Amino acid sequence: MVELPGSAPVFGRMRLVCTAAVGMAVLAGQPRSAVAQGDVPPERLAAREWYQDARFGMFIHWGVYSLLGDGEWVMQNRKITVPEYEWLATTFNPVKFDAKAWVSLARSAGMRYITITSRHHDGFSMFKTAATPYNIVEWTPFHRDPLKELADECQRQGIKLFFYYSQLDWHHADYWPRGETGRATGRPTSGDWSRYLDFLDNQLGELLANYGAVGGIWFDGMWDKPNADWRLAQTYGLIHRLQPAALIIPNHHKAPLPGEDVQTFEQDLPGANTAGFNTTEIGNLPTETSLTMNGSWGFNITDRNFKPVRELVSTLVRAAGTGTNLLLNIGPRPDGTIDPEFAQRLQAIGRWLATNGRSIYGTRAGPIPPRAWGATTRRGDTVYVHVLSWSDRSLAIPALGARVRRASLLETGEPVPVTDTGAGLTLTLPARTAEVLDQVIVLETTRQPPPRR
Image (cartoon, rainbow, N blue to C red; front, side, top):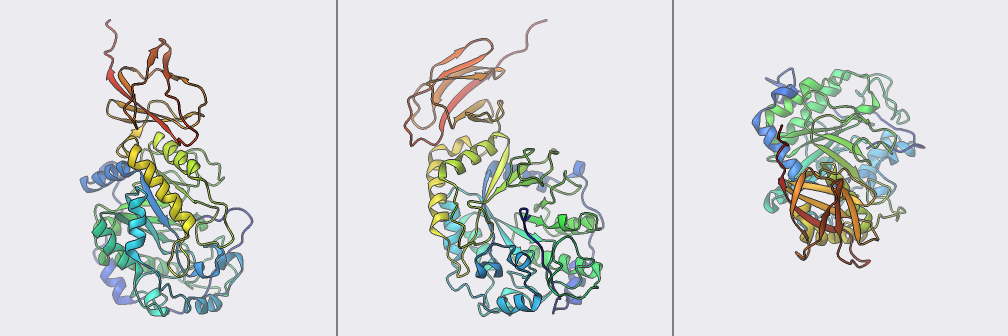
């Protein structure tokens, strides 16, 4: 992910060689251009629809950087050299990692998919790969492939798995010329960019060939070299050939490019750009916002600034109100366990969704954009009014362009009086206690016929 202002970068020499045999196997027959936006095959269209219906996913940032407990940019921020970081990687041994526990937590939170870091900017591969020995199976005493275990468990529990993959690399010698980050790791001042991109495609080929059906690839880091030739048409074509239903989700902070399937916004709702680096241009693709639960993506032992459950539910609702998915992050500890602060919040959201989930899952943006009081979602002719923050019993909302046949409280089915003022509607809300996170009103509507001429 992008580091907030006040950080520096780091990169390094690569003590590894891309395996030519792997490259030939993966790249053979690879198409040279991505599928055009207007020519998307039915498998991906169906996957996009499923993705929008899912609405809620778990983001996982976990890797060698977790050992230092200072976030995923620690190699850059502390100017750690490649040899030093390589030694650190030899000590990574997450013996308490339990794929079943991780996936079960996501399910209990009401999440429908998981996106996990297969390789972050530090260049360390969290999966078994023939492209480099610098991976968790060969380089560490753990000698297991946690992504394979996670993929198998996701299959068992009915959760889709997406792989985060960093195009930026602070370790590989062929990531050259250097980008805006990764300049203090002691790598040689030379490299072969094409060979690096071959390495990248080789690894993507492995992830798409060896882990079953993958929901998609979540790219990050292209912003480090925004003017480089990233050979996207070739890489995107490879993904679409190996898994036609896999979605491409690029965190490049630009408007969508050909071959991409989801537009993602980091720490922001679409168009808001409160983070300062997201584009305000919104394309016509499904959208997503990724969010930390505290201030860090990777494990940070001193960051205890966890968002309250009320704020997290509000973000989920406001995201759904704009037709956007929420990808909510956890940063597991280096031993493979998950901080109780993460688990408690996820379980609380899951309890809320157990009652209110039908106003989120399978919905699209509501007829009223998010307001200070809340948001609306829609499924067919049913509109859900999410009252997140409103102290009065009466709530005036704009006209819906439809007649309200029935209004009720989602949780209990209790009728809610509605008055049509001509200019809009006034809802008489049931009394609520301070513990209520979101008062959801169900409006069953009938489309109004156009006026006669």
